[in-house]
Length: 273
Length: 273
Image 1 (tube, rainbow over the protein chains, first blue to last red):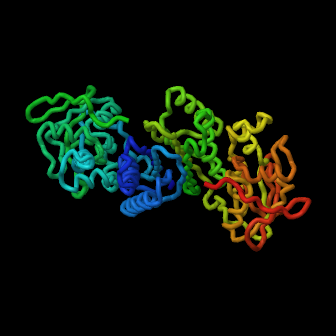
Image 2: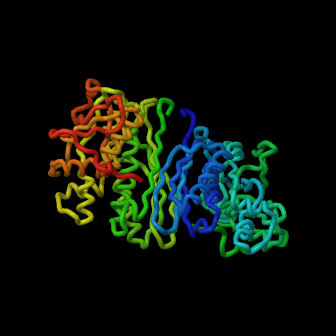
């Protein structure tokens, strides 16, 4: 590993905060893996393995389901389980932790603070399916199963992160909401950012009016990548989908607009925790 | 890191299982660091850093105490906090996870399965203070403050592990109890092990009768190192204290004896979890 940097991430999820008591344990396990691998994707890193901290469930069936979902995620993302710890737990909320280890070419891991004035703001894939899937899971709306799947079984942009990492100025994964995360990148870079709400690529079949677009960019749970780069620099392979949605500028904060003009920022920019 | 192997460990601790609701959060944090670093010590590894999964406490005072104990442990063992996650938690049991990362010379990390017939079984330091300290903390006995300190603020044998790792056949840290862990090393090596109960070095001021010795070798929480090596091979520096307490032999299981003859194995060999 002489020409490699290590990237480490640890996320913890707690019943009643990050998942609900009757969520399928297989989906909980998948998501625990996916959110941590998404952090590695944001650093352009290739995963080397994960360590799991697992609190035994209420019965064997729950443990089996969790183990099944864990195995499905690890096989899908081709990541080995290197170790971890299993603990018995008294009655109460369950909590799980996962550590993911990745590697990236020395000095190639992008930070979130490297955006420069004039850089465009890009996002991979499409935004909004995670939030719509959550609304479906909570039985507030009906919709295509793809939304539910995006919420329950997100797919971190690992390959895209590795392609983009060495050629961008700044990168991070979008997990808490496009607006809040774009604002964090701008603040970390000492800049402001102008975002064209109409340019944000929406999930298939998602409604596209202003209110729906504002919901999509503040809902979170999408696990796409957000990155800053000069317009001329981006020549990624055609199968790495991304869209320019804004521009960094001297200043601070977020300026949001659409075809009708300036859009007041919503009170809640994303998921804060 | 071309000539180094990475060693990773993740231990999780849960209220009501690994610590009690009224334990000092500073001690809980220290122990969380120490038990993970002890796993690294068992592999002869030098710590590179830790990642913390922290569930916010019931009030700010609790969080401050935890942070203080964490800082004390990290400074004492000269290990940086590399990152992690902090989560809000609903009412219920608190749970914390820690990942420790270490490095060791390529191929030098000892396994627990390398003991050979004829090897002696050694233990570093002394055994029993952890268990006696737990009894003091539970107000079942009175004793010297050193026992309580051994229980609340254990000191992993990091330096000793790095010295011994390259020259032993097998090594592991003793955390669940000397008997159960020696039995695990023997089983992993496909051997039996004979242990001289009178040879086990006891903590200062600890009682030395057979019942007290049996309590010491089954109590756990001592965080010493257990290792297998030929009698002739061990020429560690004089300030790495260790004692031969047994011998590996063809066969299986544990044979325990003292000056009075064979000692029946207690029903409980250590802490199982």
